[in-house]
Image (cartoon, rainbow, N blue to C red; front, top):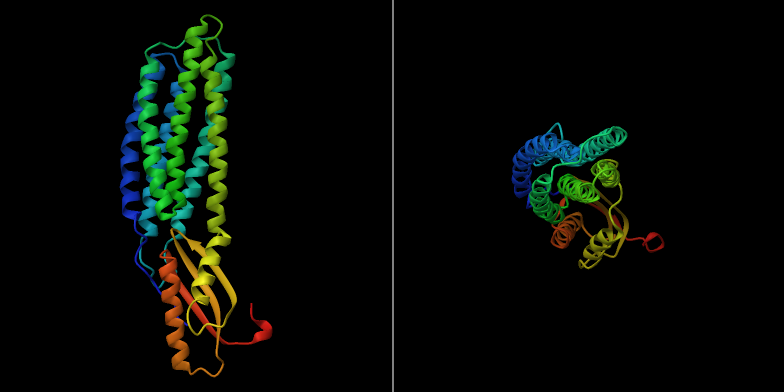
Length: 302
């Protein structure tokens, strides 16, 4: 009964590079939007700049979390550092919630404060931002789907939230310019709507991250995959218990396998090795597989 350790899940290094790129992109966009918002009298752009600033911090958190999570297990952390990945996802989600609250508060203040309409040229700035952020969102979300990283997924949705706030700002400023006098606050209302969207996404991501930190059971389909792989192994007569937990981008499997009670210890050891191999073939993300060999008892078999 021993655990099997596999190398880091493929795609982690690519995700780290995307986080680094996102860090640079967000820093540039935050400066551009802040300056454009202040000079162009568009609070929606200023709110967008705040969102980009949290994106920048989020990319840094994700990058750091993935670096820590990719470390090999050691004596202090025998199950590895994978929890750092889920923790990074929770931090990014919390940043999104904080940014949403800040934007909403400031937008409400701006709505009550008379001000001039935004400058038309701010629409060009927003159009560029929307394209850049949506491209980043698609690339990062794709990387998150490939390696099952909740932190990378959170970073991807953070990019998409920025694209959403920019789109809302574009719409709000357009309404303010087309509507003329009396419609100056349209971009502030747009910022308020964007804050709500960001808060919803942040809450959903936080729930996912906390689920991983609390060892929530994986989707039933994953357990079925492991069960079928074990039962398809010659010599396995039944499975009594099966537990799977997610740590970072990897999974740890704890399974009780029943076999012929007259089997020798050596043969049982060989069978457990074949079960491990079968499970890892069907589920490459299984970083650790612990097999408990037990005598077959028909009345307790499942």
